[in-house]
Image (cartoon, rainbow over all chains, first blue to last red):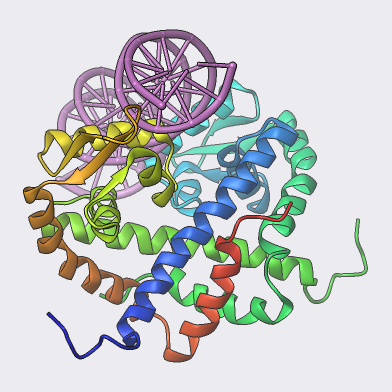
Length: 154
Length: 154
DNA sequence: GAAGATTGATTGTTCAATCTTA
DNA sequence: TAAGATTGAACAATCAATCTTC
């Protein structure tokens, strides 16, 4: 039983609190954005993420690179791309340089869906992430989170 | 086509970046902590979260309150508690005051498992969240994330 | 044999419907 | 009728095994 720290929190407790509030902030923002995106555009956040990643990459990406960009399990990505493929938003194309690889690429319908959803997505990010914080929070938040996003030293 | 903002980022872009880096930070920290906890103690993070919530609440909580504390779907919680129950770490007890409600409560084995895992959990949070950030990051990070964790105004 | 990707089987999550008690 | 909780069925995520090409 610690009797020394009955008053005041330790530095360690403050770090644990960062983890707690990080989880809470992420959970709330993701829930709000994904719900509203689904309601407004009938599109799941996971689908938009794929279209967004492909768009940023110029329209196509190898499955492996796409999995990396989305920090997603490769099996999960295979299945997610299956669904997007079935919906006609993404197509798989053979890699001419390496017969083992496949490219996931935006179809015409995929580009249209992306262009249609993007403004709504940006608006929702502003509403659920941009609005709640103040101007002075932006820089320190970004800096701190960036350190956490980098791979761990071990 | 916007030709005005070819140089420099808009304030809106900075807010979107907060969202991007929030997702990345959360994904990495959660992956690292849950993997290491599983490796070190054979316990899933979701299980620890339940034990932790019950411990904080003094050992027992109604299913509904537990779902709230974990920001978790009530069906998912039913199933999660099923598994913890089957493992002997948690028990369901009738609520004497309201026959509709149930309490999930820590069993003796649940308390032991919690006490055994807690130091490891805290160590992993320090390693994967505490270490990567600097002392000066803690306060502004907590403050910013707390604003995001609060329910949205709409 | 190793890399890129998919598949089968298992497990976990979610929605809507249900059951029980207030 | 509504609240608290669970269930069945559909859906998504994950691991290990597999297939194909390098």
